[in-house]
Length: 439
Image 1: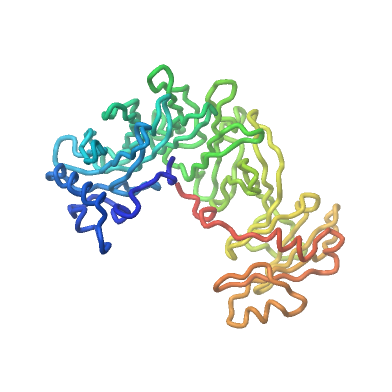
Image 2: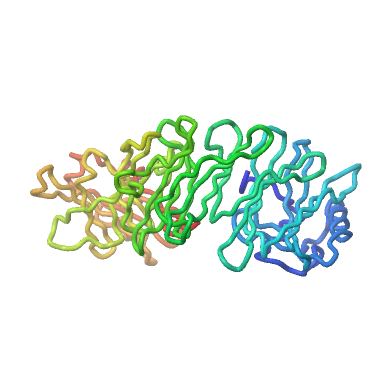
């Protein structure tokens, strides 16, 4: 359910805390008129708050101190209040529900730990409603614990608990319910991290076999849930290698077995090794399948070095057997914040040179003996950028608030099927998370 979870929008959205706070709900409320629903819930919270303080989750998309979800599937939302006390089990979740027109405290979950790390919601068992998944920081160090709760008959039942570095709920076996994939350290600090799957079966949460990551769990950089070529669900886990590379592990269910389909038994690491932190797995062509990037060295048509922020990328999908299916080629300019899709028939022979604000595209012949200039792309930021965009047969690719991208075509572009319309369609802005990549 994740970020799509309905929260108490008009009333409790102000509880976007980044930690624990002694402020009351009333102090945090700042709209002119309170609804009756708000007053009733406020009164119920006041009656049960005691010496607790509000304690919002620290990360993830569900950062509210008070969140709501239909936990038991009866069509009525329950309200979860995240708080902290001074008891021996300080982290507490108070669950309020509406009974006979009145908000009552239905259950309280108490646990050890120093803070709520992340909270997720997903349908995981065979009963109506949403399970809630709570990650907790156990100490000021790296230790964390995740628990899954089911809410039935007004009470929360813990289905499982495990230590984790990161976790992600996702329907990885395509049975219509989410499983919980947990990543955690290996047996030693130097050992590769491990991934395992928790799934609901026979009234309880069972654990799959362990699948190895290519790096230690503390090197994890980004997690993307998506699909393999052919439509099989998978989770893509990128980890850092040294200071300037990443490796992507791809976890999926194959023949009923949880496995790392990208793992190479010959090399001991997964096969996708990149030279930088900038490019991560993504659905680059919006076809519902996650593609992996393969960086290609561009052969310069002149005796100069190509700028380090320029990359020619071959994107491919992976099958359940670990095979590659080539999809598209792109040229990414991370400094400029844009990328261009290229025709796969000649993309591997492209080279790009920067000349001031212009990026000149060349294509080599098949023998790499001579190169022809195809086009130029301009990044214009001055006050006269609109006038500059129309000089020398240029045309606008994209117009933003403070930057304008323009291009012009050389004569040889026609032989490669490049027109003004095709170039505009192939131009895209880079999503910000492709630059950071952090989980």
